[in-house]
Length: 254
Image (tube, rainbow, N blue to C red; front, side, top):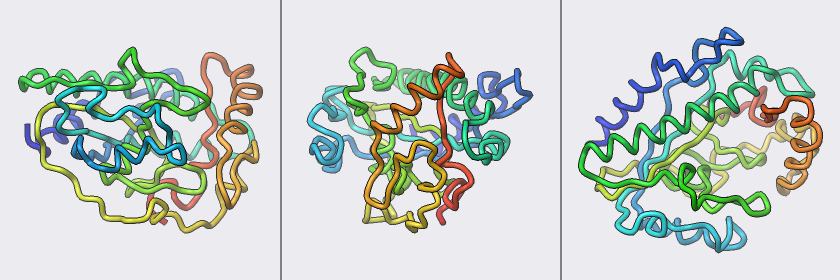
């Protein structure tokens, strides 16, 4: 399968899909058309993710997920304006954002499966790590980081808030599928991991948990806020997204 055909198939799946909406809130589309990137399964950056200062030794290589892995497909699903604009208010997350986070991730899971099925139809094998029973999260660090994979695939660079800034901003969800078929690779236009961030600090001001500083984001503080303040109020939904909305990188590279 050619890269261009893959993108067309993904866009077709996103447009008009009944899973890509939140009817309870009259949201006709949770996600806009995604960005799609590809990386070689042998890219040396994947090995660097095992560094404890990046993700950790538990982060699995593409070939550990799929023995004959050749290509990693990564994509960014940007939230539509109806989702992001609702979350501009300070404090607690907007209901629209929570639906985007939870119902949106259900759609994301369906998209991962759709891509896997496409590859199977082409005679290939695939693994979507977040659909695999081996996927796990230990101390807020997973063994397959969608954001780091997207960085490797050329989709964007990190910000102070540890979001990934893409050409369509940082407010959205990521997904990936590892395949054993060759595919043309997308180009990384950047060299530095923070190249697209202008360090304006607006995400620091937006963060209700005060997890973000000019030095780092303490994910344990963020997780504690979600677990104690958000989940008890909104269960089964949860989320926040204040650092990704009403900031210069919400829908573009600042």
